[in-house]
Amino acid sequence: MSPSELALRLAGELDRNDPSPMSSRIVQAVWLEVVQGFIGSGERLPTVRQLAVELGLSPRVVERAYEQLSKLGVVATRPGRGTFVSLAPPSAPERERFLELERRCRELVTSARALGFDVDDAIDLLAEFRANSSDSLTAGDGQ
Image (cartoon, rainbow, N blue to C red):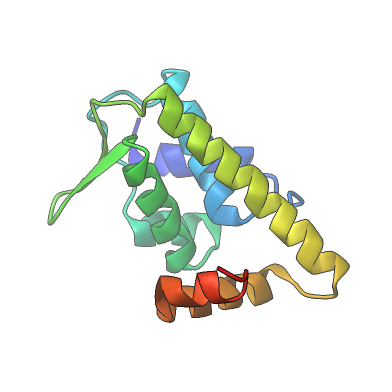
């Protein structure tokens, strides 16, 4: 499957009304394409910029999705050559960890919205926590 064909398939699968972060939706869509055999091991994915343009998204959103897919072992990036479906699928425990994190992120977004904040506010706060290191994360919970 060519990178453009993949982008078209993903565009058709991404539910724009889904409240979860678009990067997570891309991860799920690519994962399904791989496990269902539509994308084979070793196949090249579109570049971050290509996919962002074809989906009408920020390149950073696609970059986050590719980073998560890489952490899950679904893809591997070869500098100067591209991003390819890797030979090593993620382990069952790694998939479960990812699904649990995704569930908790959905809960965070729901809670933030109930308080009158949006997803970007939650992302900004998480980025602030990351910038201030793990000390900031434990300071607020009394540890």
